[in-house]
Length: 231
Image (cartoon, rainbow, N blue to C red; front, side, top):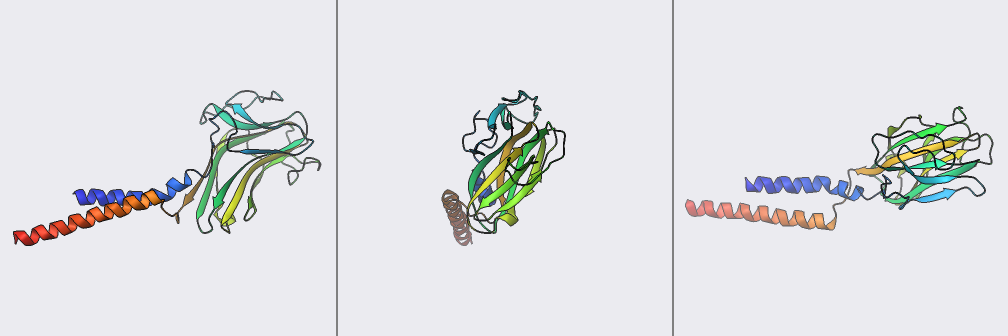
């Protein structure tokens, strides 16, 4: 019975080793620090506005536009706001390993005060008309994850970005929007990036597994010895 428990624990440690490594890929993804620590904000020069840490359900900090409260969020999220045309990116980098599966998930909404469909491409606000959001990956390899707009209500989005991780190296994940038609708010929360399969257990996990297998082997040898004596 004891041997079975030890083996089950070891198998559990091996199966969760990859998850343990994945948990730190995105820092402050829920923005509950009340700031944008762990993230880098890039605003196009000459434009208006930026990304802001934002109280859940509060009005937008510059334009005063009403924002959608998020029942699945905490106290804070991240939000873009402006008083004129601009382009704003919220980025964070991570180390990618080719051959692993990467699943990006987050909650988001967008509010386009112009009432128009997404228009334009790229994140240059001096190109007119240009008003939409983009989620991109750059670094060791580059690719577009999404371009367009989301609904006015918070929703959960999941993207398998494994095919974009084509080489080992540093990657930068970017949540961006461009606006030159009217006010545009892009809300973001609960950003997570997880891996599935192929992860290498951490050294502490290996040590625990090896020690456990040693205990199991010792217990099995002891049982065989006791069996021979009894016979």
